[in-house]
Every structure is written in structure tokens, then in C-alpha cells.
Length: 609
Image 1 (tube, rainbow, N blue to C red):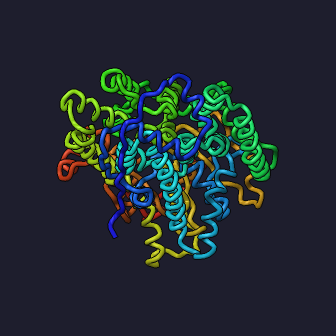
Image 2 (cartoon, rainbow, N blue to C red):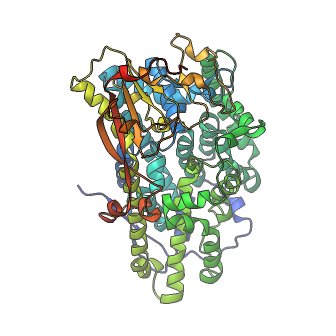
């Protein structure tokens, strides 16, 4: 059967009512009936008109398909995801993995409870089917995609009720094709989990399920990222100021704290071997320490503007001007109409989380793409609202007569959305074709083992120098006998080190760890110990970064995959994939898997670390 769609019938405009204090009086009646009335006010019409939109089941199928595509084809763009989440998870499952200073019991910034949410289903899958570890990696990603799509369809249904069918279907289209949602939906990052919770908390808020909204906000703040509590501020304003429901708010907060924080403290304390409140530790480090996150780089003020455009194209710009679009519609299109039900949450409050988040994070010197993940769904929502406002403005200025603005504006809005979707697909393809090589190279290791070229019993060291940050995790190593080793490179910061092999390894304070990103030479090995080496042949050579691929007397190229050279490629074309043109105007290096040829040729008297 084909995908189901529903035809919604809008109803005649309900007579004008006094809006003064109406929301405050009626918001206590959070029934589904009042929400359906909210829809009727959103798109008033004097005659019945059919509006086609995807049902919840159909939306879920679309979203799940898109998220599974992300699980399979999305590359890992942030080394923090690998070393702070995939590696500790690998340690919990298999007893081996890299440990960063944030997991040292001395600092204890990260939560093992958050890891266990992902590890437990992966461990069950592994115990039942005994698959290749790489399949466990993709199983986890598919689970994240499933969770994301479930949260998205809940959010979609809530938007249908609060903002109307047209805004909801536009938002669904943006979420399906935007590169931002493609990247964030299956990333193993606290900010991605906070994005899931944003979908649930905002969806629950729009349905007036305040207890669920508070609980999911608390889950986001405690379990994944404490700063995500900022998204819950407008919900608190609604409950405390507009509704004056202090009792429900306090009850919800207390229950959430006991239900989430207490088990979390218990589990984390068991793993660290001492009393640990991980959310408190990460706030103390980022806000109150003398050095904080700025050690890891700073970005200019326009970083998020550029990143937002790449991930959402002009929809991101549309989301930034949504408040102005709503003001124009209010005063020039609907000034004589009660076009929005007073029982709906006021726009200035319901859209506040996005702009509050941007105001806070745009002024932080340390900026990362993942810091905006929690508000990605709100970017999609606000972008859709702006497009809807554009339809109303076009109808008012160019048509001026007719039954309903949707009947006369689809020919205007369709090409706009088609271009946005094509730009999203183009950006996604560019990322896959340009940056997926590291994951493909490490997949080759499993192929070598399966084909019998390498014994699964002997200890094998696979080394990397300047490409340490593109390592896709130990889940891509064929067996426990394979070990990643680090070589010297121009990177002068602190690299992670393996967990202790002892049973209580997570409780042991590792040596040579610091919270100031100082280089630790103990991480490096001599190249004579390497059996395989992963390196990018970029034609650049320094004393700490030799061009290993050109040392043909010492190394054999087992596999090479093109990897985009961002510096030499056309800036626009490297960002958006255009068939034929992209390959012509972009430059590439070979991302190589090298096998040692004659290890005896290396000088064994070279410096040991």
C-alpha cells in the first residue's frame, strides 16, 4: 500500500473574543478538544477546504527511512564522539578502549549512566547474535535513529495541533532533507540526546502535558548535557507566570530529580569508585574553572551563521527572522482577525527556546557544531513558520481575494521547498563523498581478517599520527588482538590513553592525565612497533609528520580512498555536491591503509617514548 495521507477540513472562523487574560484562564484546561480548537483558529476559512498532510504513521515511515540512511552513511565528524562515548562504551562491553581525562576519577566530568543507556541494548544484541563488533556499532546507530524518529513524529503531531497542518508538513519536509538533522540524528553525543529530549519536551509542552515536559527537560539536563536546561526556561515561565501553577511545577521538578539524579549518582559512583555528580562537575569545569573549554579552540562570532547555512541552507536564515515575519503578518495581514486561538501558547514564548539558546551560545568563545544540536528541531519549526508567513503575505498582497491562502500559494512555495530539499541532499552527498574515507579504510581491516590474510590470534598494532582524530572507534578493529597506537604529529595537545586492563579499571586514576590539554609524550609509540598505519597522503611533510605513503621501501599501500582537500577545492562546490562539476573542481588526496614492508629497516635505536 502507498503512504497514507489525511485530508483535514478546516472550519468557519469562530467569532471574535476578547483575548485579554484568555490564555491564562484557558491554559488550565489542557484537553485534546481545546487543542483542536487551536488548530481551527490557526487557519480560519469561511468555507470548507481540504488540506492534505501525512498521517503520523506515514510521517514515522519517512523519518525512520531517513534516520536509517544517516545511521549507515553518516561519517563521524567529531573526535569527541569517538573518544568520549564510543571508546568508553567499547570498554564497558569488551574490556578495552581509550580513556580521556574526563573519565578519570580525579575529574569525573562524564557519566557512565548515559553510556549504559546505549551499552545495554548493544550488549543484549551482541550476546544473542555474536556479530562482528562493527555490526554492533551500526546496530547502536540504528537504535539512535529509531529513537530519534519516534521523538520526531511525536513532535510533528504536536506541531499539527499547536501551529497548524501547513506549518507541520513544511517542518516535516525540512527535517527529512536537512543535513543538520542527518548529522545529529544518529550521533552518539549528549547534544544529540538533548535534541531527542527537546523534541519530547517541546511536544509535550505544546500538548499541555506539563509533567512530561518537565521530566524530559530534566532528563536532558541531568543525563546528557546540563546546559540543555536552558530550553526548559520558557516552560517554567509558562507554568509559574502565565498559569501560576507552582505546585505542579515543584512536584514535577522534585519527582524528576529523585527519579533521574539519584540512580545516576549511584551508578556513576560505582564506576568511579567515589561519590560523583557528573552534571555538577561539568558545570564547574566549563563555568567556574580558570581555563575551561577555551583550551580546545575558539571560533569567530559568525561561526554558527556559516554552520547553520551549511546544515539548513536558507531555512536557517528564515528561522532567524521568524519573529519579524510574525509581526508583519500580525499587523499587515491579520490585523482585523483573531487568527490565533488565545488558548495557544503565545508566539513570543513558544518560540523563545531557539533564540534564547542562540543568544547564549553565539557569545561563547568556544564554539562547536554539536552545541546547536539541541535546537535543530526548533530551527526546522521556525523556518517552516516563516515560509507559512510568506504564503500569507503573498496571498494578501498578490491575490487579495479567494477562499484560503493555501489554495493560491502552493505554486509559489513548492519551488522554494524543492530547492531547499535539493540543497540539503547536495550537502549530505558532499559530506559522504568527501569525508567518509576514514570509516571505509577501517572497514577494510575486517575484510582482511575475513579473507584470511591476517591471523586473528597474533597481536597487531595499527598506528596513526596526524589522523588520530578521524579514528572511527575500536568497534572497527577486527578483534581484541588489534590495538590502535599513536605516533607523534604536529598536534601538541593531550591524547587519550587505554583504560587499565584490571577489573576495576574505571576506578583507577590513570597516570599522566591533566585537565589543561597539555601534551603527554607517554601516549606515543615508536614506529618500529607498527604493523599497519593509517595516513593521509597530502603531500606535506614535517619532522613529526613524515609522508609515510611515499616511503615505498618501508610501506605498502593496501587500500587507498579519495579524501577531499578542502584547502585547494572550490569553497562553494566542496560544500554542495553537483554531479560531474564536483569532481572537476574539487581536489583530493588518498587516504591510505599502509602495511609495513620491512620493519627491520627502521633504526631500533630511535627515540622511545
